[in-house]
Image (cartoon, rainbow over all chains, first blue to last red):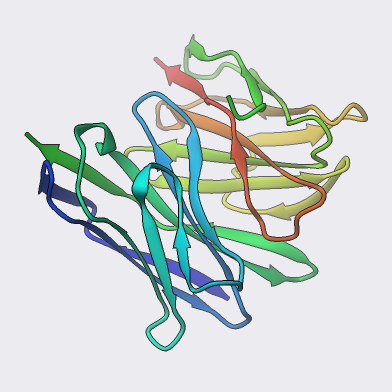
Length: 115
Length: 114
């Protein structure tokens, strides 16, 4: 069984401030982890992924995430928020289950950037 | 542009009707996933196909069905529509060369049931 918990359905930050979006996962087998971003009226697009190489993963638009096995976390950060970062962010876990890769998404966190 | 194409982008229909949503995966991708996104339920996995065969089933209602055709495009059929079926329906495909579960999403089909 696998699951994803995103803490905070809404997060507000000031422009230029640190962005921290939290994600904790549960998986009985070694997982792959992803962050996706969804801009208004668009589909989800991949922001970054952890695939068991480096634990600190860098993605597009200055975002990065660190895989911490001991904490079962994969938090998303960006040092300085930009207005264009306002979107909904989804954490996802993928693990082998019943012979195929099962993908489970979190409930999403809406990021508001205040000018 | 993810390479995943969904039609129609918008659809308005009445309760009790039936609609078909279409998805063309990225060139070469064998897997197609369908998701429903609504305000109260979030992103819900419906069903997955791999090379024409059903691979996994999620929270898909019996009124809904899907299939993947030999040319790898997929269709999601929604019947006896209810107001609560109003949502964004996303299709995603995953690369055949990757076993990580990375997904490429289409822009979605917005269904409004009146």
